[in-house]
Image (cartoon, rainbow, N blue to C red; front, side, top):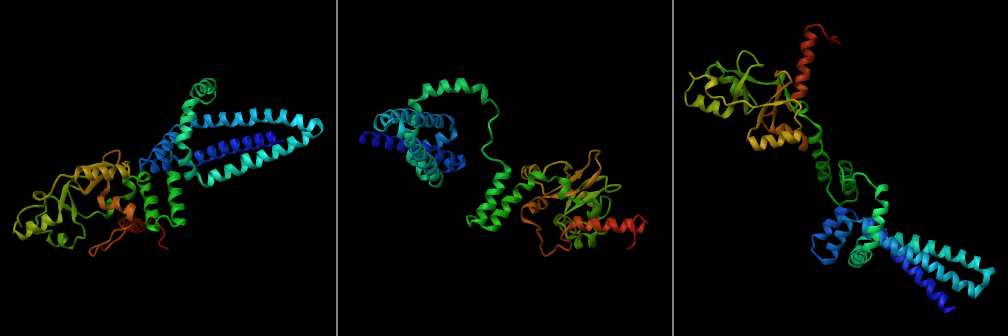
Length: 348
């Protein structure tokens, strides 16, 4: 009888250990394992190695688990048959099945999932050694199952998961609300284009290149923009960009006979389809703060600034000189007034 009890306990313990270990390993996200590995501790490095190539460690655990379950059940069956005979063997088998389900599957997997990180660090090095020990068998199984598991590997994470983690982190108090909001907004950069964030052409303040500085002095002073577009015949013929500070400096230095064209700088153009994240890098590398947005035919659609891109992340940036916060809304109002004037919209 003692032999039977010992064998049953051994099978239950071995199977439970394998089940809990498997659940713990699979419950630790790869990103979490890499974060833990930054401590450079041997167990943490072993855990990261296991999570990065999890198929073979899991195969080793499954092999060991089946050895406990199959071989152990055969041995227990023989011992039980000698002790109880055929009459009570069925009852004993039912009790053993219940014990295996409860104590070798449900309970250890629940604990493995709940304490995944602690268990993972404890068993990482032994599991790595077990994987090396059973490597010939694992390689044989990989050859046999290769045709059934072919396909692209899943990415470690994706945009939707990161957004969800940010939201859950905020709900659980792990990160601040502004941090969660910023993470959500970062992904908007990839979804928006220059056309989405630009100031439309109807709201652009511009100067004519041939104008003398003295003639446009009041316009320059009253402008809320630090950079002003310089045009030739019309706004579709943009010649350059003039800095308000340089225009005012020229006026103060009594260069009133000079024209706007003498003070302007070269204008830079971008297509309307450029994504906001690419546009941000363009601003950084070119060291420019304003670019002209053009359509596929080269027509001017508007202008976009570094501030416009940053506002995707931060919301509207307003200083004491801004009279119109949303220039896109202003452009829509001007368009509606224009259409009403020409009778294309109802006056109601």
